[in-house]
Image 1: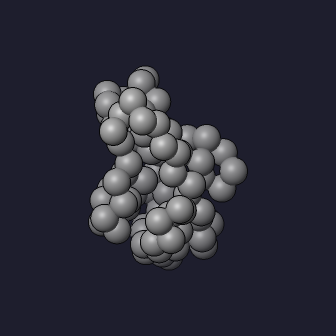
Image 2: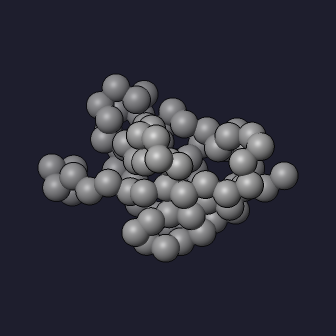
Length: 79
């Protein structure tokens, strides 16, 4: 089963498989999510996924959800 991942404000939708890393899915859609430590400690890759703040470097696409909306945050210190 594939999951549709809709990235906002970019308005880009990418098909993903459950268990795939959110960062991998974003990269496949040419959606840039800033990263730092890649272990979830620095929170540089924090996004909102279906209303919950998650760190995309340690978050996988969940099973049983046909569509996910991801809101990207902007932090000028990481640009």
